[in-house]
Amino acid sequence: VDGAPLDEPYLAPGGPGPDFDVVVPAGRLWLLGDDREDSLDSRDHLGSPGGGSVEAESVQGRVVAVAWPPVSRVEPPAG
Image (cartoon, rainbow, N blue to C red; front, side):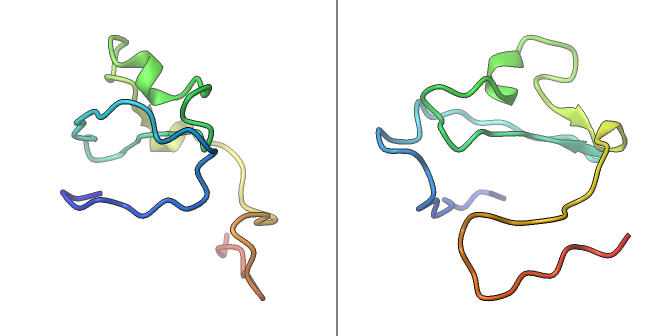
C-alpha cells in the first residue's frame, strides 16, 4: 500500500498469488479477497472500465461486525 509491502497474516494458505502493480484513482476502491488463489476480485477485472477498481460511492452498506482479525473490541465507523 502506497509503495510499501503490507503484512497480511489473514491470507489463506498458499500465498498471496502473483505480484501486480496498480494505481487506484481517487474516489475509487481496489477490492481483494482474502483467499487470493481463489478470489474473483479487482484483479480479475483489470481489463474492464476502471481497471478493476470500483467507484467508492457505488459501495452500499456499513460495517456492523468484524469477525477477523479477532480483537478485544471493534467500533464500527459512524454513519
